[in-house]
Image (cartoon, rainbow, N blue to C red):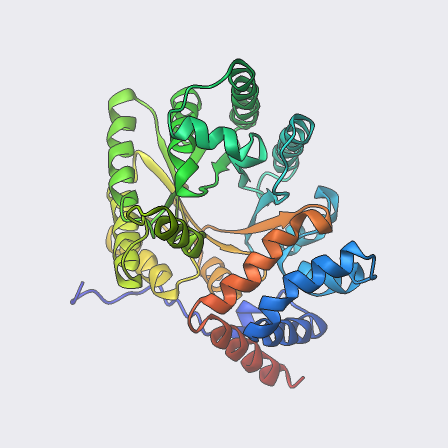
Length: 396
């Protein structure tokens, strides 16, 4: 777009807008938290220390809840999230309620997770403007090992067939509830060795519930070299079979684990060879969705400033209104507020992922956020620079 001059007046450096939802106290807490996270040694030993301290009942829960939990989570329950939801809504940013309990393996836990996800949909009905999306992970509703066997097309034993039938019933009940409530529901992406079965389930749910518009959204991790083609194939399938495609576009969350497993098991890694390739496919996926906007609804889940600017510019170039109901930007709670709040201020649809759940149960999520921040080149420096700029502006 060499001759295109954007008129959307987006500025991701406006810290007054980016942090207007934070008090001076919150801003100082964020500054020191990101300072700590930027220390790789602390991030590496933190999970081990925390698990050990909790195991021998050293009272550190209060410290965790007042720092990293407060930064990245909405609360331990849906009701505790209400103040965060309202604070985001006050500045025009939606909430994606995310029950972030991980690692459960028994049927009772899966049943409880199903109920909790349905509660999030009911909360979204209560607050229709504030909560545009809900989300779930298939591994919150089915055993990881079972998903691996199905993904590998291994014959299931009779008890496993029954297990899978129960899991499918849970997934369908969630998607049906979302359909009846007319609320968007996103299915998160997971590891590549269980992703094929998740993709199949997501497409089947779209066939059932996306006939009038996109209710169910699948997630495409563009750090995989095959996911741009998957998106294109799925869009063609949706057109042929007469349903709308819902797509959440992300770069990805399991890169080191994926590469390690591929090396250990001696197969070709599904991960792109370099960041440039990931960025190229991500931006191509965004452009593809815009080209097919009449039949595709998508969420651009990204903390990449260039990708956000590019999407805003492409929308303007194609004459797509900032508030087009088929396009959302999304970031995680506690991160990249300069993107979320400046996009919202400029009139775009934006929603923050707001994870919640019992403190001990969401620790894996919190540790991933800390590790992710240190792994993203320049992320910590960017966050700290912006917070420092706003603290100077406020003279605190």
